[in-house]
Length: 206
Image (cartoon, rainbow, N blue to C red):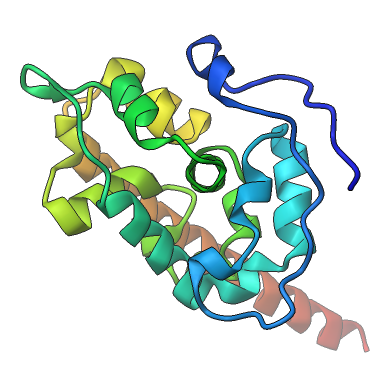
């Protein structure tokens, strides 16, 4: 089986637990069960490689069940606390042990969300503005986003989302996430208006 040569690993702290990534095979039975899919083959790789793998498996067509099961996986994580906050890196190291665990982590934190969700406006709870690991823990353990140590939260969410949470603001992280979801909806409405406008302009030119 062909192996991709990884160009980089996610962070120096996590570097030790990742291995080279292999090209996945498409499941024959296509069962709606997370473990029946080649999640292990997402264990490593660059972000462009992960996006290609997800596209190869057409995971966006499985979003109605796939992401719910992914959240359920994260909802079972054991949290490592440091005082009043969750130690993000320690929590990842404790829970990300097998290739399956690593694949889930890569899908949540390093894979382009549009490759996992067909239409983010229809599934705002799984949009690129939602940290899937934190969402899973919140759903199944009722732990607020604010309980995670923001300084090291890059280990448990996409980098761009983590950078957005670092912006100084009077709103807490959950309020910011709600605003981002609303922003996604506004963006979709603007696209629809643009399509209608273009269609009308085309009709006038006939």
